[in-house]
Structure formats: C-alpha cells, structure tokens
Length: 112
Image (cartoon, rainbow, N blue to C red; front, side, top):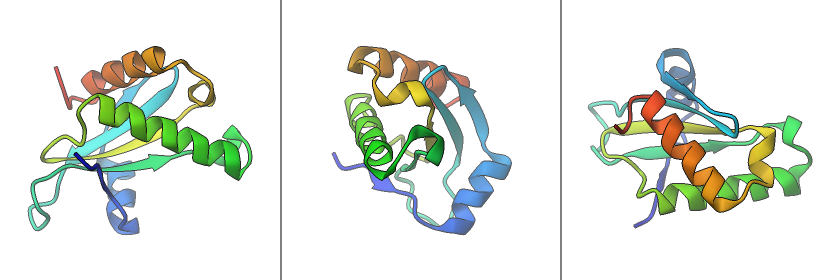
C-alpha cells in the first residue's frame, strides 16, 4: 500500500500547533485527526531538518523513515502525521528505527 503524503502548508502548520506529540530518541511524531473534508485515509509528512546534514543526508533520512512507516503498516486511517527525524535516525539499524517508530506512535496516541 502506498503512503499518502500530507502536502498543504496550512495543514502542516495546524499539525505543529495542535498535534499530539510522541517523542523518541530517533524521531518525533505529531499526530492529529484528518480534517472532515478530507478522505478518511491517513496521510504522512516526513521532515528532516538541516541539522541532519546536507541534502543527500536529509533525503536519505526521509527515505529510511518512509520505509519504516511502510513496514509498520502506515498510513493510519483518520490520522495526519508529521514524522520528524532526529540525528540518530540517519544511521540507525532498521530494527531500532522500527522500535522507535512504534514507541512514538503509542506516545502520540495513534496506536496502542
């Protein structure tokens, strides 16, 4: 299944202002309900800031996060998520990244 991407700047801003936060050592998740006017399928935006390095490192980090979300079965219906990479996510083994994602999803109230 393909992960739908959250693209609207205003919706991403609202997610940062009002989203529930799940913190981890490798990543941070912000989650909120998908707006009623949107379809009920979940959407995700992947964020890798300049603290992670140059464009190549940031793009690699987003690819790694995208794959972790696919392995975890995302996107989650009815949820908009922002997954923000922390520096350790860049070179973390897949199993460790999967555990960090699962922990952050529980912390944000997306899964149990």
